[in-house]
Image (cartoon, rainbow, N blue to C red; front, side):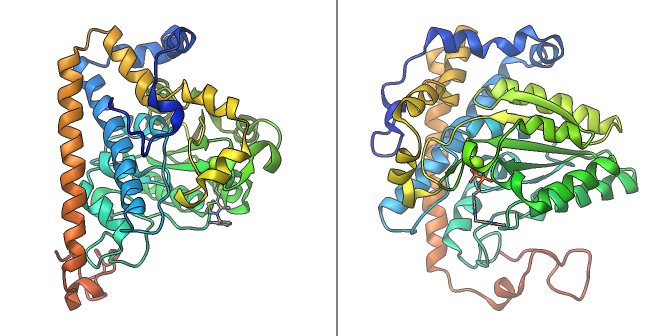
Length: 371
Ligand SMILES: Cc1ncc(C[n+]2csc(CCOP(=O)(O)OP(=O)(O)O)c2C)c(N)n1
Ligand SMILES: [Mg+2]
């Protein structure tokens, strides 16, 4: 993909494929159950994953551009972690499964069907944004997207409850959320995991280990093996390479199948790396948190670059890839412009009153989101 000197991490600018990384990218094909999942993917499926990876990266670049131009004061980005989101959601069925995206999972909003301009509006807090301007944690029940709670770890318990409701109603649905390495240290996370395991609910918990929580390296906020924690609660843990969209997809597909078969929740442990700051305000400090060599090593593991190289090795043409990128770039630009028009809209009482949770409770509020 085109690289953006003003926005990309420096390690991505002259990105070239490292032969060792190319070899490593194919590792999921050597494990029979993951290989069988991946072999079922056709050309359109693979190009679809590419489209989602690009859309996610460019959405974040769009936010960064807004920060630089003073439209918003800061943004939480998922640079370098896109595959953990895209691979996981691609394994689900957006028409029935429910997802709770964290701050670094904006790609999930788009994959579950939220229009890109609405995702951007979430950051503008305009009255027509998904949360009606109340919160920049973004979700929309109309798209099976639970708006996350800011307090880390609490979504684990909430999603365990969502999954329990599926089980009790006999619905063939899966609930999925992500847990940051830092959030694994909260009490709510452990209560949620225990409850999910004991009640054998159909939930997938993706631990997104990006090696850092705000400004604290994971080695400084915890010790031991995160997968062992899941197993201690009696849950299967599927480890995967969080920078390899195919590995995340295969692991989450197998996890979701277990859930649908009634075998209870699964933890997918994805190793990745945050290629920027906690948010746009602390990028310099974040660079000082780790040695430069670590950024270089993970920079060679750019999830978009690696997957693009894989697609080429599978015969994808330059024209195919460029056409997708051109379409996604214009889609993102148009959506960002459209969202900004919302800042000029005068809110109506209906828009202000809508709370997003009234559906099914007639009389409590507006049942459909006014536009
Ligand atoms: C209970 C609680 N404590 C502190 C915070 C402030 N906070 C927001 S994000 C964050 C770090 C999260 O780290 P991690 O879970 O690893 O997710 P990441 O940001 O790396 O994706 C902290 C401490 C919070 N939101 N909730
Ligand atoms: Mg983290």
